[in-house]
Image (cartoon, rainbow, N blue to C red; front, side):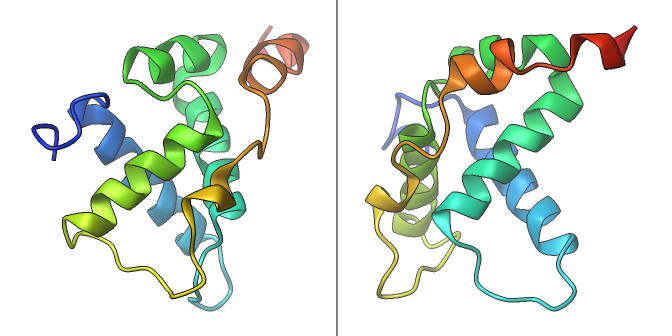
Amino acid sequence: LQERNPRFDTRAYFFVLAALHSVIHALDEPRHISGRELADGVRRLALERFGPMARLVLEHWGIRATEDVGGVVFALVEQGVLIKQDEDRPEDFADVFDFEEAFELSYPWEARL
């Protein structure tokens, strides 16, 4: 994967797959996950695992915006790791949230005390 898409660290692929698993696990019944839902799942899992370092960790792995989450997903689709539906597009991941807002400005600093 990383040889074909070197802009993302190997850990980015595993992390997005972990976020997908987390989103699916939280559903009452299994179903297709939208790009918006998966991007939000990446946000939640990153905050849970990395706290205030979430943005820095994701950016270190090459994920600097929600569009990059889509880049990881479609690289996984291209390699046959994930499947997509006909209506799924990389644009589904565009501007789901702003990294600065989600990981810094809206970080629940008081909850971590």
